[in-house]
Image (cartoon, rainbow, N blue to C red):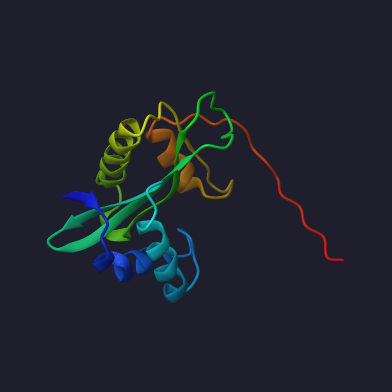
Length: 145
């Protein structure tokens, strides 16, 4: 079953999101982040539940600012998606994305944006499988002063 996340799901979401390949950070920090996300009408956190257990989530946000490669506004933006390791490669991410796409269309979006780190080959492959096309690559720099 895929549904919108609820307050009772926050700890489970934070645990999935704290995995290094997802968002990282502490579960306490992420619990607070999810509380804020669930309180905003511009965000959707969708969860996949199997046998009463949350095994995956996707977070999208409606963005009005420019999103690389898009020509319309607002744009739905995939902020994060996570599937517990033992449930990967079973079509769950695609199911979540389809649920999110329906939610975004109801809010007037005709385009979807997303990003991933260059080194995250698994995320890149997922984006390609979901029908995204690569728009650009960037390199970020920093220098201590």
